[in-house]
Length: 185
Length: 425
Image (cartoon, rainbow over all chains, first blue to last red; front, side, top):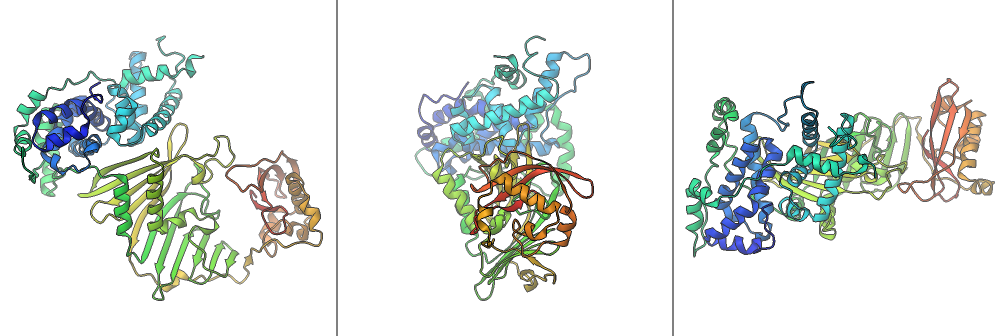
């Protein structure tokens, strides 16, 4: 987990970076890189491309940082850039959001089938819920950290997580996967 | 605790499926790969500068991925031909409140609104009723301030029209039923949820006030680019206090957990669309969608007039009967039984005591006349219905032989204080 909330607040770092202090920007980079990769992955469904997108998000942020007025909203501002970058890349890829899944053959390992089913369930969620689930499980971000990036309250994160997970569990159940057999195969 | 109820397995499954080995941040390497960006930032030291924007270095990203090289080659030909530059912008996240305020300001001088929408509802049922499995029904709505500074509006779906012509308000229910008020009623009257949307200013102002007063409310905001235009998308989560097992749950938008997805134009700030998704246990169901909005267009005067059939049957207020006390004392179940029994006996004078129109329609007589009561269940109430309203489960056999099982909605919030039928037939 890379979002270091216990250190200098974003506002101070942003202000320093806006005044040309590169080290401050470096701290923000380290703080948010992983969350941007997670967010990009929720749209691109391609880890390598998501990592590249995350790097590019910081190039744009570095270039346009002076336009950021609400310094306390740096995470959300980055997320906006990230969505824009990834959607642009999606267009170039010429595909819509869909899990990159090889449909499991009969011989495929049951664990792999379940993994595919989980991914399918996640990519059937609405965009806002998918972003949240991916951020939560991509790198284990806390509710507070997700709240900062998605710019919604921690309790809203919680409510949306519960709903999204309920939908995923339902989807898995319909496809023959429940908690009963989890860990036994 | 049973394994299936222990959701830890789901956390584990999600981590297995989505979890990733973290990309270790290497700022030094990033600096080497982005010298121009670094130069722009460090050159600001000690001064305010305006930053010239340049297109995103998308090529480096794409060409690093083998998967996308071929696709990119194909797309570039089309993109160049269309002179598309998708990436020549980076958009700071605006706050939801600012977006709403901008949208409110944008409609401050709007004098007419025309909306086309679709909703999962029944063509002739009221404008708020929804059903997760219903087909979509088209809705069209108009509102204008006319040359006499008088507001007029019309909300229409295939089986129902709600019209306020500046003086009177009429609801016409196909083929010949109507409710009339000799005064201008506000949009939203007669339970017309969709009608309220025509008051774009108030709609957005309500959202703004809600956002300010409920900081815990779930609101998300992001940008999208559609046909090279920047769009702002605002999602507002709404949670109902109606219990999951309540009869009216998910029968009206306000009695459901749902999300409203507003779309605004990034340049004009005008509201361009709204979608409403109802949350169910395993999916979100699109229940309502504005498909088109036009502002400040001229309408023909005929939009705000209705040609009514000659044989209209009008709704009326329940009057106090000579033997009103007998009906006042009825329990919900007794009222339902008396009503159905009167239908069975084709005693239309008695039926009329439970009906809110001036006479009983011939179609209704043909439908309910001679029915047989199979059973009546225990009445129940819903938090989403008026506190003097009840639902009485019933099963009847119609003269046609068809067996109908449903809940009769009856309410006694009227001057006569006796139950009248409100729905469920």
